[in-house]
Length: 196
Length: 430
Image 1: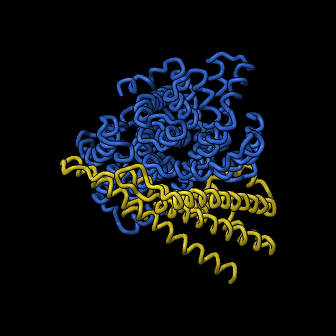
Image 2: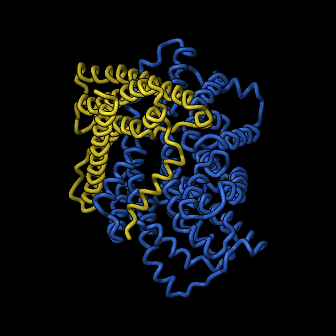
Image 3: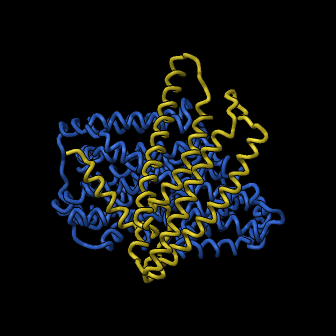
């Protein structure tokens, strides 16, 4: 597979991940609203919303971290970065992605430990729902899998672009989004969305 | 350990490592070099229990609420309405700049989106009416910073989460300093324009008809704010529930002005997930760093450091304030806050300051970082929006205009130091 096609596939999958996270959040929001209304009209409390919100946050947290990675949204301080020549900038980008791959591996290893412990002990949440903990933990761990895949693919692609001295392609996937470009994108978006 | 940590922190940030990565690497470093037993074994459990949080989910809700409002064009209407109410003051429209930026960033919690929106709407007006471009732009940049102080504030939620401080208490504590700061911004504007009338444009006096019509656009935003903040304060709702209610109201407001299209919701959702992923990754990294630092005996070492420095309580706080002002020149706000909390908050609490009070002080210092050059996010935002609107002059224009407001913030910091009750009076009823 060519680098471009790999990248396109990654972005497509990531857009799906992002939308899924958004919809899950929206559902959780509706769930909370329903609970508030039911509490007001005293139908009794169906409870457990807090617990489920926590699980939703855990799942969204790991998947969204991967989504933000592909979208280049993780904050980086570019005081030095923007003063370097292209080679130096790409080197810093590769180091950053390498570091993220290392963190992802640690998260998978230790997160996997949490999951396997819950599975072998049959742990359930200490709540009325008695949720088997492996279920939310599995979703959470899959999110870190996505984060790891994204970091690894971006790292490999950046190194490949760098070896071909294709600095602009490398920057397009790995360089920090500059404040200027982020703001311009924001303005352009508002221009488009604003009702006439 | 503390010195080496601080050096490693700055070094990693300078080589543009993502902030979350930096904090994770520091945590591994603490484990490797300073701990007698392997701490990373606890990593999985710490990250799981930090992310499994019904409190943190309030953050994406507040972000989504703000995205909905900004994308539906409510800000432009608010600006017009506030113009009708405030432009009789010396300084005219500049007061509307401050008030709109304040109201908007307060409800949306997004400084960037607010400053971009208000600057886009306001700049053509200011140019046409002959306002001093510096003060006009600086006021927007400064007003946009208030959102992280006035509840609901995402930054306060992050502070509360990392320091185990009550979010409702923090929200209560932020209210008076936030509103007071907005009023001080308006007072300084009026003062400058009274001394130098050429800086302000023609003072216009809207008739009461325009004001009453404006209320139609103001009232929904006020209801939104009151519903979120009021329900938390009254104890009817947790911050998360209040955020969910806020999303529902924001959706109604957006729908009422015809801005609740499928494409707007789609874009708002993706924007929310993106910002959430960025924030949450940093929070998780900071939680893990917090844990390793605690286990490696940071508390004991801090105590020794403080004993050896032999500074008084006030002197230590002044040193911390100076440190934040200097770091604030270079580091972006949320990163500055999260990266320093694991080290600074224990010091402050150990020398006897109230964690709620320090939360507000920290937010104030970080607001200042938003408008102090060379790296001040709001300065960049306002400048980009001005350029897009065809206004003349470079970033220097915004920097100069923001300077009086940065000084006002510094005055506020000293007021907060002298009168802790500004922050702590309201929570004392909570």
